[in-house]
Length: 209
Length: 209
Image 1: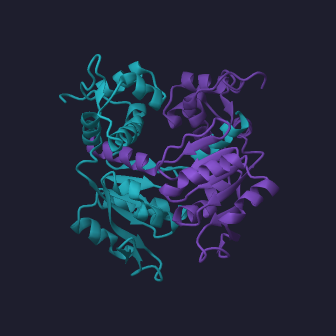
Image 2: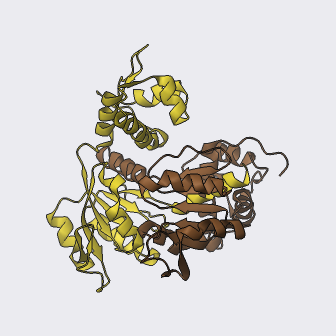
Image 3: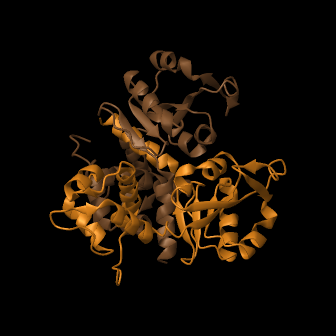
C-alpha cells in the first residue's frame, strides 16, 4: 500500500465499522457493494468513504463499486486483525469476565491468553477455559510470553499503579475500563472505554427525539 | 437556551467528554478554564469547542474563558443527566452485572431499577442490591414503573426478539451490547456498544505507533 498518509483519529475509529458492515455482507454472500450503498449504511457520503479509504490505497472501481471480500481483507490487514493480538485481562470481575468471554473480540483476532487478579478466592478459578492467575505473576508472564494488549478492569484507585507497571514491563497497549484518564508516556497506547459516555449519548437522544 | 440548532452526531458524542473533563476540574476546585486549556485537553481546536458549545447557547467569555461549574451544569442539563434516567438491564450475565455495578453510570444520573433474566438459577439472586426478576415479568414492570432505557445484554440470537418486544412495550431507548446492529422504528433510539471496535482501534495504533 506504499507510504501511508497520516490518518486522522476519526478515520481510524471508522475502520472497525467498515469491517463490521463488510463482514455482514460477506456472511450474506454479497460479492460487491456500490459506494452509494456503503455510504447509506455507514451514514457517510460516498465522497467521505472514498477519502477515508484513500488513506490506505485504491479500493473501489468506477461503475463497479467495491469488492466486498477484497475490501474486508484489506481493512483487516490495515487493522492488523489478520495477524492477531494476544490480550491479558487484569481484574477477574464482571467486566474482566465479559471480555474473556466475548466472542466478538475473539472473532476479530484478539486472543485472551491470561487473566490475573489479586483476590485469593478467584485465583485458580477458570473463565472461558483460562485459569485466573495471581497478579504477582503478571510481570513474569509478560516477560516470557508475547502480550500485545492489557485489558485493565481493576478498581479506579488501583488503575494508575497497575498501568505504570504495565508500561514498565514493556506492554504496547492498554485497554482501560477504569473510567479514569491515564497519562502515560507515548510508547504505550491507551484506549479508554467509557461506557457512561455511550449511555449519556442515548439519554441526550431520548430527550431530543 | 432558545431554539436549538440541529446538533450533529459528532458534537453529541463529544458532550460526555466535556462533562468528564469539567467534572475532574470541579473535583480539583478549579473555577474557570481557558478555551486553550480546554482545547488542549480535549484534543480539539479552541474554535471547534466554541462551535460545539454554540449549538446550545453562549458559555464562554472573551478573556475569562469558561466558568467550570456553570459549563458543567449546562452540559448536564443538555444531556439530561441532571433529571436522571431509569434503566433496566436484561440479561444478568457478566456484562449485565458490570452495568448494574457501574459507579460511573450511576454517578451520571442513570439508575438501574430492575434486572431481568430467563435463567431460573439467576432469578431471585441479588446484584448490587437489586433482585433479578423473571423476564416474563418485564412487560408488567415497564407498564407500571417508569423505564427510560433498557440495557440489552442477551445472547445475540435473542437480541432481535427482545428488542422488538421493548419497542412494543413503549421503551424509549435501547442500550445494545449484543454486537448486532438493530433495525427498529425511529420512535425507539438504539445506541450500540461495540467493545470490539475499541480494541481494534487500539490494535491499529499499536501496529502504527
